[in-house]
Length: 121
Image (cartoon, rainbow, N blue to C red; front, side):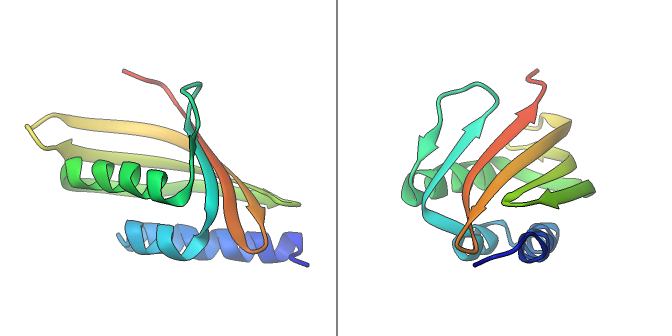
């Protein structure tokens, strides 16, 4: 059985992997095969393959990362939350500074669901 402390440690390891720039490696290692991910109130995306493709498309759309920061995180029971800031230039030249919160639910040592909250614009 995974405890809250384990979830906090796993979440920290995941966040550190993301901060190192290994987005897709982190996804492969920390996300469940049946993961469900959701952006705001958009329809959820189910399954690791579908979410891998979605995440890879986002990574491929970024031309340059100017800043990527973890502003804070917390974990309790099987839930963890992290607040992020990113400043990126996308392919095509549009530069965006964005803030988002990732809410994760853990099961058997893997992220079973993740929902992102941010202001669209």
